[in-house]
Length: 84
Image 1 (tube, rainbow, N blue to C red):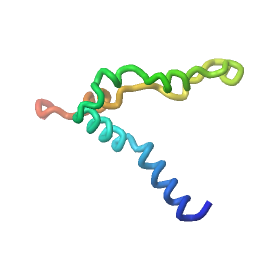
Image 2 (image 1 turned 90 degrees about the vertical axis):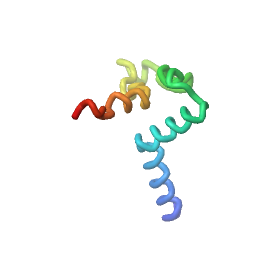
Image 3 (image 1 turned 120 degrees about the horizontal axis):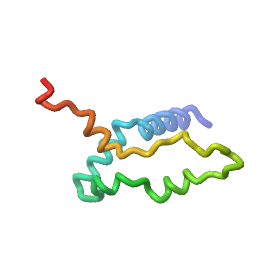
Image 4 (image 1 turned 90 degrees about the horizontal axis):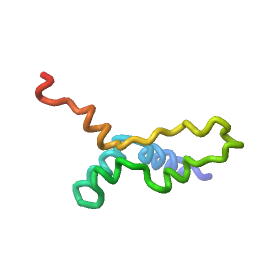
């Protein structure tokens, strides 16, 4: 892979995995009416399908990923003016 492609991939993957960028994108989708907050409370069908793994590969089940609604988690961490 060329150095330029390698740098692009590193930059792209860092942005894709950055939680603040993901939350910002979700907020924009929410503000534009593309999704509701309740839509994010349940995992997507693709996420659920990916979590069903072969027990021969993971005898105790796959426990590496935990589903959370990033906008609800973010809202619980915001500081209220009453906290001061």
